[in-house]
Length: 91
Image (cartoon, rainbow, N blue to C red; front, side, top):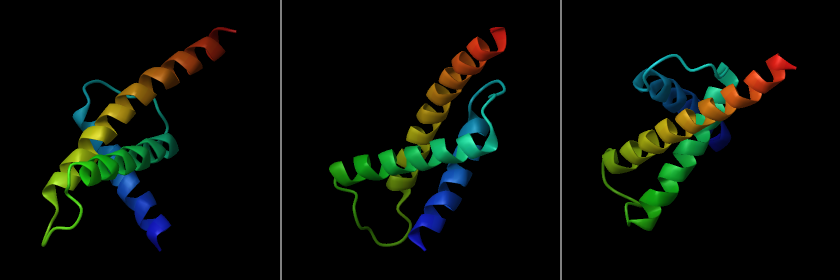
């Protein structure tokens, strides 16, 4: 069941990241979900490194880190996607 939650959370994080970023991102929905999952995993890793592992109630620090990393991964992934797709369309 944890893989299903990773997909759901990655989807939501990716959509929120796309909404926060200025302009229109050209990445497809499946790639948004993958980038959201990657951002969530990176956010969890950093939260563990800084000592935010288990808290009572809602873990706002962990969620904020997940969102920040999802925004960064979506932004970088969109630039890479545009570069790859742009070079394919020209040939």
